[in-house]
Image 1 (spheres, protein in one colour):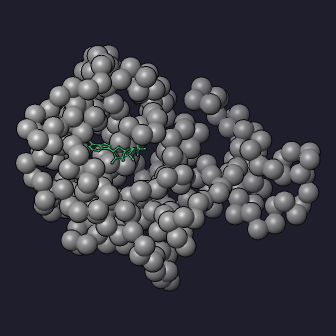
Image 2 (spheres, protein in one colour; image 1 turned 60 degrees about the horizontal axis):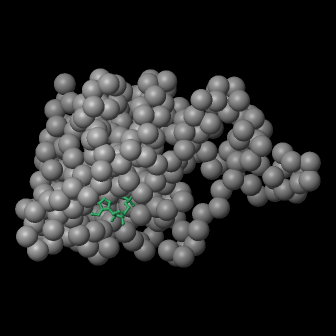
Length: 294
Ligand code: ADP
């Protein structure tokens, strides 16, 4: 899908829709489907494009956090980065979690199980317990944490967990809002780096500036002695970054204290400021601030 020409994209979307198959080609299949309007428009502009442009235009800096594959720590990096950015500059920070398959940001930022309030202007974002970060996620729109989201066809492509088709939709929707660029998250293993190469090519093709790479799980912080040990073999992101001419923003080790914070909703910046992961993330945040303010 990554290399599909753009005009094949809509055919692929329609192929995913049950109404496009002969077996299910009945109008009743479309009844109640949230993708009906998009289906009819078949690749035309998104009906919400104007409002997206207006609202995103009011936000000074927009940073995409992307990865080539799941499980490399995209959500963890987004979570730690939002905390670090809020701390570094006392800036107003918001996180939009566009993962529909396994949204975890509300839990990480301590707003799990809070209802979203509908206002005349749209959904009101939730606010993290310390008041620093605004949060919007599909997880907060579900009745319970056991409810799953089932989207097919065009509606699913509005929201990206990790494949290029969905990335493409979000990049297109944000085009007018001119994001600062993307932070790409990877782990040291060759299998993750291989997908990172594809992600870098994707960003180049789509005209998305790569602000830099973050190497997550670059080692393991021992819970006893706090020494960091390398656990995954790999050549490191430095040579990959060099060959694509993009900076490495930093490396963050795995720290069981961070995992504990992720599970409990506790703020690692407040509770474990000496964690190598926290210190590294503060460095990454400062690096990023200098890049976007250039
Ligand atoms: P993704 O969003 O890419 O699917 P996650 O951010 O959900 O990945 O990370 C997967 C798991 O690894 C989570 O349980 C998370 O707590 C853990 N994890 C990721 N990075 C770290 C880290 N640096 N230190 C500790 N745990 C981590």
